[in-house]
Image 1 (spheres, rainbow, N blue to C red):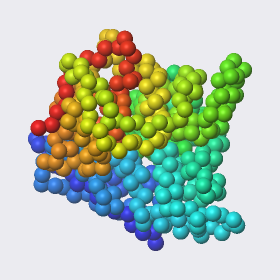
Image 2 (image 1 turned 60 degrees about the horizontal axis):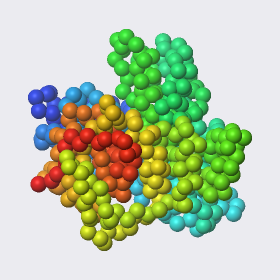
Image 3 (image 1 turned 180 degrees about the vertical axis):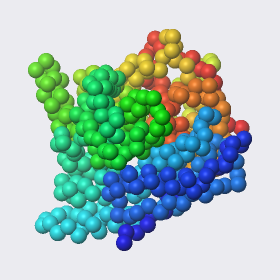
Image 4 (image 1 turned 90 degrees about the vertical axis):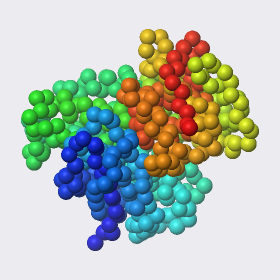
Length: 476
């Protein structure tokens, strides 16, 4: 019998509303998990527990623990009610899927791979860090952990895990998009051509052909979405929904945009490079000489995860040619700061130089692209935004908010509360302007709590764009 993996959700009642039905929430979460958990390929079965706290909701109405470890969940919106609790719990589990790979899970996965007797497999020499890195790459890009053994078939000692991963998913048939619906909405297919075009124009992603299937066992208004190997959590519309097709397409659009980077692989990229070679041979030859394809794919995925449109791929490639490689950023130097009156803040020296990685490289590309990054955020020729006080920026730089879970009374909790209060009027997508050297650090710390937040580095601002600072986040 498979081992159990504990998933515990604590619910905080919203003042002025009826307490949630704990049993109903737990049943709905268990039902939702039964849909997408098997596709993850984990060697355990989930053990769900839901309990009701006596403390009222403040910033959060859910606390979630995966394997005994608390993970981030988004702040509660003022219009949220208990009706969508099961979905929000499931979505938080899915968004924290890399946290499902505990040490025990990793040992189980490794044991499964080692049980496959194939000659000359270098699995025994692979360090644990590589096992974990490849497992996380699979889950974060929409692939089941059942592919871990196949991924290690492409791994050799000294090879990067990214290169092994790209070899595994390089074939076109690895990228899949599947929609299963009730027969009542099987005419959904007529909406697909416009959907393909909209995604390409707004993100530059060429989607695989959507496979549409019907299932009579599904209730009216219910559907399943599969991107690559993984089944995605959705909240079905009520049975009396007047337009179930539109509801299904809205969910498909939302998930495809969130997971657009899942539809990038070396095969697709090479095909696009080949198509450019006739008109711009010099660019493509130099790109292929300077940048390994697996590194290009990783950079494009990172840009897409940050909602950067890569449709003008030749412009992205041209930017990459002007970059010698991922450059570590020394963010202890001069940091432009944009309070109501612009000035320059000098941070004290001594910060540890950031390690060069794909996030750094994507940041350099963003800083050179400028207009495609910032233009979608403009309103009436200016960019309404928020900034951080230098003291808060210093705390971000020193890593105080990197791995901390915000608890009432903590500095991080106060910071999130201040951001929440300031941005309540445009919580749909608040924009923060920060020093470029800190952009990814700030984004990594805040995005789990504000999923729609946009963090813009100062170097990404074109000279003729005017930041309109609405407020500055400070701490007591």
